Length: 249
Image (cartoon, rainbow, N blue to C red; front, side, top):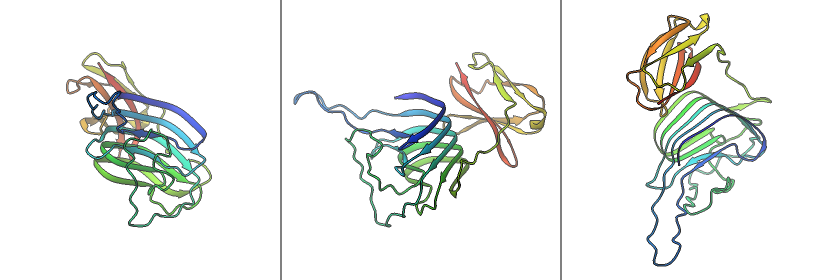
């Protein structure tokens, strides 16, 4: 599984907001058949999501030992969950359950994190992500185990609230043509964003190029971009102001 995009979803009355799982259920169809290898999960983008969970069964991104989930990005994610769970003991080891089917309770209800648990993963990107516990929860919001290339910007959590707190972002920001087939595109932005920094990253969060927004309609050269998914960010000293996905063909 690769190149998956999920966006613009509002969820209520659910148990677990999301689960990205690479397991190994490759069973032989008869005794003499060749054993199947482990598959892969690569380049998953989950963006512009609001979710209100009714249980504390944590969202997860998990592979198995030796086989990482790769390049998973969460952008503009606002999740609330009931909270009230105690912290797990220091010696607790969560089972791998490599051959289990990917149900949301594959690891039971004893998960070290309240908001997001990540294990056996490479290149995880979190931009403008907020997990809100509706009552105090003793578990850390995010827990990482065997994770490489982990990048965050504007992550919040461990907050008691009665509503999901959003980060206000500019609505007067666009990039076109999109998808892009040529060597230039236009960034269109409101006057209040002039002077901000334009940052282009790939789907894993690696910065590709950077410049300054000097015009409300600014031409950007993309000779450095190969075919793929990118994110065009508008940033200033306060952090991320706006972000748009750009497809390059």
